[in-house]
Amino acid sequence: MSTNTKIPSVVIIGAGMTGIMLAIKLRKQGITQVTIIEKKAMIGGTWRDNTYPGVACDVPSHMYCYSFAPNPNWSHLFAPGKEILDYFKHIFKGYDLEKYTHFNETVIQCIFKYDKWHITTSKKNNFTADFIFCSTGILHHPKFPDIPNKENFAGKSMHTSQWDHSISLSGKRIGIIGTGSSAVQLAPELIKLPHTQITVFQRTPAWMFGIKNKTYSEKKKHHIRSHPNQIKWINKALLYLFAKLTTALTKNTFIHQKIIQFLTYQSTAFIKKTIHNKQLQKKLIPNYKLGCKRIVINSTFYKALNDANVTLEDAAIESIASKGIHTQNGKFHPLDIIIYATGFHPLSYMRPMHLIGRNNVTIEEVWKKKIQAYHSLCIPQFPNFFLMLGPHSPIANYSMIDISEKQADWALQLIKAWQRNILHKVEVKPEAMEEWSTMLNEKKTNTVWVSGCQSWYLDKNNEPVTWPDSWTKWVKLMRTPNLKDFL
Image (cartoon, rainbow, N blue to C red; front, side, top):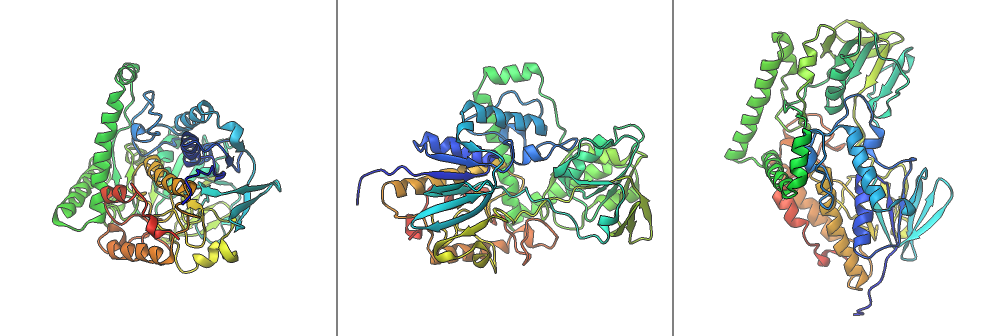
């Protein structure tokens, strides 16, 4: 075995939270042949795209920053979107990543041949790389509901991730379709506008925790700056609490059932304490198990529903007309603006990019029956390719940054093995992929996600595509890759 250390060339697709972090970690490991390809004119991913009123993180701010760049200056417990974007801009500039980045350039095709990845972009540029990190994220393809005649609406309409700031909202009749995180952040902001009437169209209610978004005073921020270890302790405490919650979602033991029951009681009590109308309370209490759909963190939405200018409609939408929405209870809701707070297609990943592996196999062929990846990152027949935040990442109400960092560290160990010629290429064995899938299938039966609900945590076969075991177990599995699982 050779002791020579090879220096790989790496292409990172996407300059969002994960892509920025990868570029920094690669450089720290001495890998400087890094190219970032970003489809938009600016970095930031989901925090660049989502600019609707009230947009904020639903993970505590001190959990939502890089381990190597803690931020003592967060303004709130749950930071607003612009502040998060500014944080990423600051990191991007501080690490001088612009010189590695191609903006306004979309990757059209990646094909593996002659032991290299060959990348073609929308600008007809061609890149060659030893490794690809696909950091396109999971919340970047807006999802619109299949509602008859929605194209006939004569007013303005938009998705929350495609906000049109030129549209005047004051004095308008606005329909918000959806009651997930985006909708509950948006509605309380819109009702502050003069003479605005809001109708929220709810398909299914969300379990919600009313954690107040407290403000960090200048005195508090100064204290944190003066005691940098405090952020570490805050993080440890938050990580512990979130880890306990995620474990409760994946276990079916007596104690974990009691945790779910307690949290269900707390969420229900929050509804009854905040909502004045008894009938409205009934509409907002979910009939599925807590955690089956993503838990929403918000303290202002229920208060907004008490406003006389806000209506919650829980009857299904029948169709959209030129001047409003028909619901299946026979009502017509006249509207000037429709806002789709309907989420994203989380399983699109790198698509519509053409991804072609060894022997001209396409990602569509490999994923025809089921979308899967070994350790969420590696796909058989796609050597030296890492899909960040891929299927079965532990995305349930956890910090995406922490998940991405642990995945990156795991992948970088495999690149080290390639550099030292321990691995000729980083390609997972089909049998290792099969064993991984079998393990996931065995564990999913104990999780809350198979308890019966419609959720973006489920694939087309209604099987969970999030991690079906405890956070602690996942962290342990992601410490060191098993090189025997690779060709």
